[in-house]
Image (cartoon, rainbow, N blue to C red; front, side):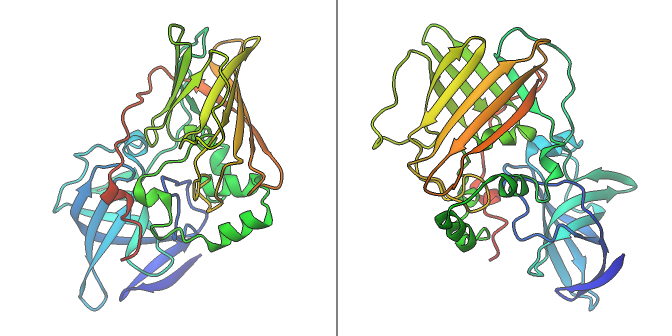
Length: 343
């Protein structure tokens, strides 16, 4: 079905259909993902930065006035999987853009695809990682198949809304949350600690490193540069008054299963990307087990936070061994992170 919509003086045909899966650092904040705007324009900026690559295109309204569209893409990692590079577009290029527009009518959107001279490239690609090798240890780089995550309307947002059972305090905090403001931690390059990074492994690989000398395990994510040290020397958690952004993690072996217990989290306004906070009661237990053929690890986790969650959340997912994946620095850029906020 097609309808006509007027945005800042531009009357554009919008195809109302189910959108292809697109989600990112702040997901689909303020975006109408059920509509697609198509227009031709001239590139005035192509910014290759995290958490989002941005494309700025100038077009003309039906009255002949110039209109500048600011268009959000995926991160460098996800855009790269779709075939994009920092040299894909140059200032002055003529392109045709399909974009999901902002709900408030401003010329801002999330790119679905770009057509440059007949070559069409999607805004981001969430492709299942290929099995290319096996291993006999949890060490290495791992990434989840994104298919399950994006079966939820809203991607990351939809996943957590489907799985979190909120207390009244949690419901109020979620309802009061303004995702299009500085209240959103994403606008300040503040990431989301476990278990969000396990879920985000559909977008960004994680790397596990074991160090027998220091009796520690390092779990690192390519998203938001999160690094977590798991202490394997039988120490306990510090006093509850000592709190950390990523929590304090201790680990032990249950046979061949790595069990990680994380407490002492700092307060976070939106660790699940939906406006549900977390506080001093947040507690996460993770279990990592290598599959028999060595191509995957099964990760189970239990999340509880009695202040905001009425019941614990449990989840299980498989991560594929992906030694070919890079876990490069994310280097979140504050200017790019804030760009989704209306002026």
